[in-house]
Length: 324
Image (cartoon, rainbow, N blue to C red; front, top):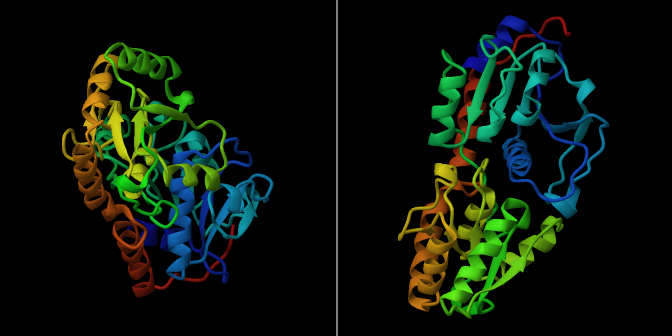
């Protein structure tokens, strides 16, 4: 695999090569793209790989309250030449400072920056959906780009049937289109809708947010642009019905009439919400969505992805040599 080839060329010290996942120092609310990177680090560590998070300060701003992890954290400046560094798209320019194997993880359509040398042989680009793959191929030609499975935490979001949930509660994120959300519920009321009542989630700790997902019956996808789009996927894991925008395909888990109700305008969403007042439709969608999304649970496709990487590495032990 490309990582092994790059490591052989670079050489390394006698210290074991690590996977170093760069994340921000500060967080005001759970962010799906960073959460997804943390979860990949968790899986690599669970499989026995030396995997660590890295921040500029070396401190963990997330911990149990945010991303529910117990992973070692180092300073970004403490990375070594033989380490494989995973850099989020937000900081893709930092890839130029990585003197060794590097991954730039592209998860958001409006963050495909040309601020790093994508032609390097020891640099790979990862992405998370067919939409993003198309965009990445256009922006970074000549690169083999895998679609890396998102990680949906089914322990934090256990499946709970619709009939055991709070009637009429629908989750909304105001930071993802507050005007659209307001228009949806104005149109819903105009059409005589009274069942659905929005539950606003904003700057809420991850553990508290997860509790809301145990109660709500529906989730409104309101963003025009999405990254790895974990909220609708976590909704599907939990048994929460998803309705709203598919963000031009970024919400790839939303298949209209099967796993979700796709609707792009306030009028279309209001109509869909009236339809979702029917318990039988909600139950069908919830079970279909769960069957689809379970492929992204940690012990499914994500773990298979990391087993493949680590198996290849174990068959070809890393050489020792001079460090950076």
